[in-house]
Image (cartoon, rainbow, N blue to C red; front, top):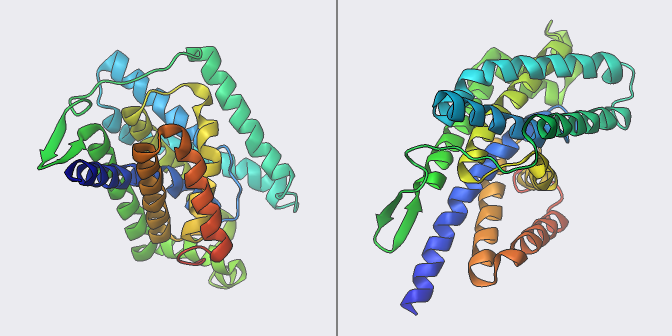
Length: 292
């Protein structure tokens, strides 16, 4: 009985830490899809790109992967702004964003994956850091630092974005453009410019999420596909555009996956987790927190 309680406690803690990682991976989609209605299925590819940049900085220069992700974050932000500009001019202004826009992001996903394969091959890559390996022990609970540190960074990232959205003019404008672009125009703000900034923030978050990913597990180019369905499911389950909902939904998914893997085996984990997500969406289509 004690052994089962120990397993349960560690599974719950691991699930919460894993959920924090899922929240960081999904927060960019909460901005692009939840607020801007842009189905950026290439977002996980940008996360993997961030992982490889962290890998290069770590293996060649010896830079901590999280520090490396913060250094290159402005470059990811500018990349996101540039991608949105192309998307806006080519599709959104012409009213072709639904199907052709989706194909546009699928092409980016494919090109990014192929470029990474050509540059690095299909071998798994990993990083080294002092917190990868050791664990904290709180009684019977083990806290692996390779999960704890990324979880804290994830929550700090989401907290910073939340503060930005609610306490700056641009942040409030981003929320406004998600609700009523016409009203935003009446306030002399350009919706396209606001969306460009928002999409830049979305892709910028992928830089940090990529570093977190490669700390938690080795990566290879095609691993982005594993997260496409998961991030959109979490985004919808939490409520489109709701950061708090995204965190809660990600935590629930992390706990469900961890409990399933602990007591029934890792092979059942994805199926049970997605089954739980589908059940939640069937019972509450608007998500846990609804749309902003």
